Image 1: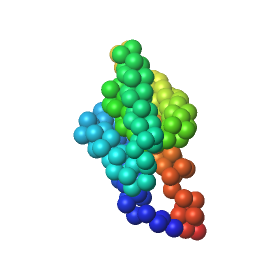
Image 2: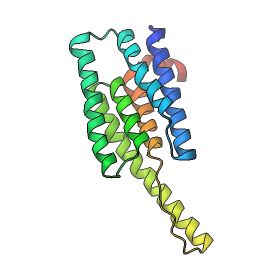
Image 3: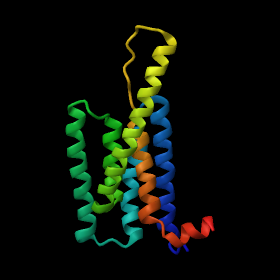
Length: 169
């Protein structure tokens, strides 16, 4: 049973925000700054609702967020990643413990690979059907993979199995 409605309400709000991020990235290839900011600002509320101590728990979360931002900003500088993706991953780092965040990154990479294959096939098929020599750059809405990995992390590591069994059983 979900015994802490504030904690799980915040996780529900995060899940909704991730769905919005995935949808908007799929639709416009952009993740709004206000959405990333809302996700980041929700993290401290979650920390307090979860009973985290200021030292070392919250400090670790802030350090993980800074490390994520610096690492993914380097990828952005090399044009390997979009700015919205960097901000979304940074905001998610504030919510996840380091071990869960590492699992999120692995799941994101796997889902991103599948997404790339799907969009690559779609791009090839649309060029073949259009019989156009026009070069259409392939853009992957990687926010979809990030959001799906985030949803997977919430469901796998933060929602008790008994609550999920109660909903599905």
